[in-house]
Length: 288
Length: 289
Ligand SMILES: Nc1ncnc2c1ncn2[C@@H]1O[C@H](COP(=O)(O)OP(=O)(O)O)[C@@H](O)[C@H]1O
Ligand SMILES: [Mg+2]
Image (cartoon, rainbow over all chains, first blue to last red; front, side, top):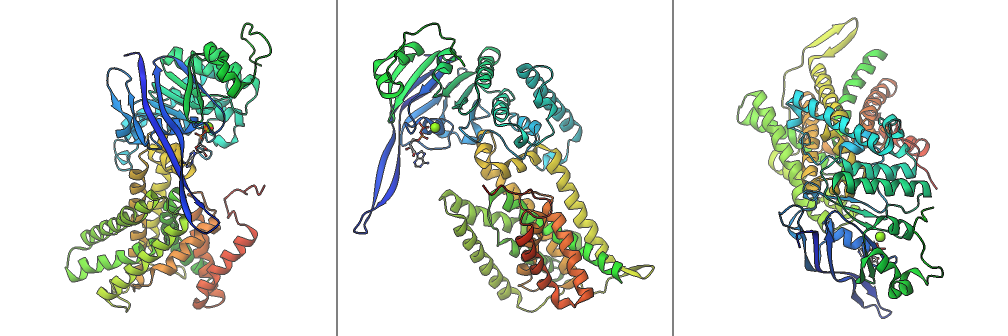
């Protein structure tokens, strides 16, 4: 079991909302968004979570990254021998212990420069304190210089020598195109010492060329940095070409899990999510 | 005459700028319309009076104590009023009304303890310098230098330090800050402390010259808000530019009309800006659709 980095044990979550009846009574209705989710995320692997809109995928991410509390169940994070109980750790400490996250829509800080967007993702807390940053000027300078250099190296490693990110590093991040903003959101995850990265629909709304680029970046996360990736996706060719494992969530339950081929060919998954396959599977390089 | 009023305006404006910056620091990052900020400005000189005049402590020490106590009051509003309400997911309106409540309670407490009448901390008339036919008092010089130094230092930190990047990140997206290892509740305390510092300095500088009563906070808060709006909400340079512009406009209105017109001018400027340039001097136009 020491190949597991994240243990999700029987996690449940309900939301409640008030319903006003015709006679004026207000009743609270609970609805279960996650129902006893069990998932062991394998270290160094790319695991894709698929399922229709509203199935509870993002809610699961919010629970893992501490933005929501669970009602029941346990979450353990075991990056390297140590065992962290995620229910007992404040969310802001998660990045320090190596859990990174990219949201579904807000990827960047629009009014920070491209470079600042990178710098803020550094998990090393040096220079955050308003009062210590007043003193120790030399040391601060050196560390900041080193951080900047590291960011530039990441841009070069991901996007080649002459890339728009290095050129536009002093511009507001909102001046980047939508696709570039997404790439910046991913590149930023190389700044910290992340071991487990949660990506919420990384390819939603970007063009096929960028989809390829994104797949490349995610591969580099795994190959160069030994990150473990947990990603939510609706783009099946992307999942097929990239992921090692796949989990199908339907109305708050994990209904099927296993290798990508297994899950995508599972009749139940086909019926409830993907639609019937009309052609035979051939070699999967159907990116664009 | 004109230049004299212009200089007076810039000096008052520098205090507006500092006080407005403290308000903007909280508003831009937390979206709290921090009405209770007015009491920080008002209460700092009362603290100073207590230690300097009643307890006869040395001026420097008294000022430091007064500023520290004001910062504590600022932190207390966050810890005991805003943070619990935010935790309960209260709406911005609820926060604002609670803030008004806190302000009224504090004003009444101060009126009860110190009385309603105007108090003077520094009874002596300030020396002044004369350059040509322009007169600048010693107090004015201190006011201008102090506000400028604090504004300048803050701007440098905002631009270049990681603390500054985090402050601007908070303005952009608090949720995203959380996943990048920012302790948002803790960071808010730092912001409230700095905000309290700016209010305290502004309050003490003004009261040293003109004295104070329990009601000086509200008009100053209005000036700060007008400065913020005419500068352009969302940017941290905005309150500085807005404060200076407002100071100058008010001073010139004294020259053209009379001193009673000051507040009317502030509000006319506000209305004109809201109508014709809602994004302020340096704000960018929002897309309407
Ligand atoms: N904070 C919340 N409060 C109430 N309901 C929520 C909240 N977050 C998500 N939900 C509901 O939970 C369900 C699952 O949402 P989500 O996890 O975002 O789905 P998806 O699988 O598409 O990412 C949806 O019905 C959504 O309306
Ligand atoms: Mg989602």
